[in-house]
Length: 316
Image 1: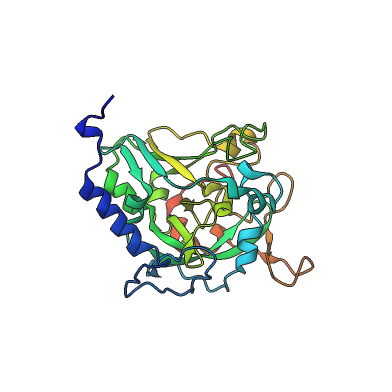
Image 2: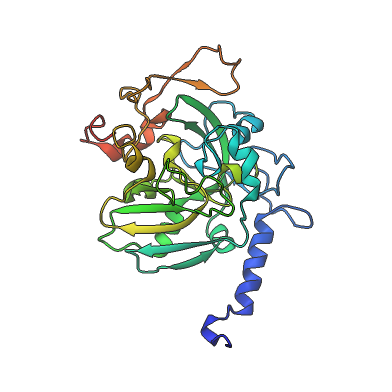
């Protein structure tokens, strides 16, 4: 059967995609734009990603970035195993090209986006964000991407859209723990629409000046710095706009432990441990003095207004 004309991608569009990707990736044989080098130099482990320093308030953490080996060797990515070292050991099987993301639900412009088209949508910025895990450890990571709001404005949500759902890849052929009974697959997460539109909410394509390592959620992931790390969905393949609050993976698995909002709140303990303090990876070993956990992970000035009047112990 021959394809219809409407099913064939125009040659000009394909060439434009290639040109856009060449300008974004500073690998062998590509040219850097004048703003290519941001605050963090590429490490040379993966293709470099052109970026500039971000001007978004709160995007330049005062904390020193964590070591690359800590950020890439100590991860939660349960599709590849439950031990913190499993993702780095197992994620090499993940196939990230070609990659598409489906936009669905209550939007004027649903459709399927190729990765290179998403990357060309906004100017890549470096944002140095704290990452706080619900288990009590934290990192500081220089991410590369742009505000999710850029994509949201492009697809034009309907007035009835109140939430955004994010769906991760669930491929048992390349993700050995997909199918385990720990979670319902695929992994899903969600934000209220105003949270998703906040300038700090990042659609990330890289870290440390390079494209994302597979164990960190390649080829694109969410980064919501004022929430616990599990809210930042990895390896996203679908973004859906809904009127009702979407079900999320950890909230379905253990609703008494993982609420929908999951804002970093030192006053609300996890049922099995305190959230009042945290351990920064790489700081003088396991015996280092723990840090005091900051409300909203230190981003209170930027995001607290999103929750005015809400009981943040009830809506944890």
